[in-house]
Length: 280
Image (cartoon, one colour):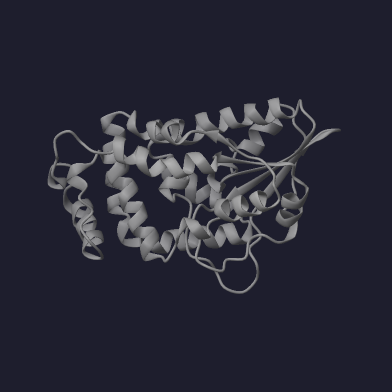
């Protein structure tokens, strides 16, 4: 999810990135499926190789959110995230989780978590970690692709709305939100290191590592996995199957975590009878 900066990290220097990408095709339709990083350090070189070929040949770009929806996400977050009555962080977290949350605050300005729902505090923590890792969505894959397709005069569409994405979290039950927040706080001391390792795997196109890191983490919170990954992947694979009924070439660019594993979009499309192959 772009507003969460969820699958991001610092880039390795040296060779250009070769992010994993798949292609599903029939006689008159081709859909490239590119796993993205929503935020990257300046200068990360990810748009060569087969990605460049996909950008050049695609008639349209399809992302999680259209540029207009992504631009609206901040305002929608500010409407949905606040609590009616503040709740101190000491009433939500304790022990190691609370100590590490406070340590994260000590490395910058106060997050003001007492004023926000649990899911929103987790978003704020993720943004703090991204800033500490010198990441920005302006250097992410979606921003770069948007610029390229706009320059070429090609349409850009979204699979979801910003409000719809945020409501996935807003509507999680209280226990699930608290578990997500607690896990994020407990792991915040190593968050920069973890996203660095995650991005290194993305750079290599190492889908085995991406699958293990992403799924091992969210598997611990089944309700969140269903809402954030499984259900959306099924909707998106159904979109791919339907889009195959119309001719043309599409570049579909979504967070890398949605494309790996047995419940990733490529696997689901293939299970539904699509001819899928990895092209990078």
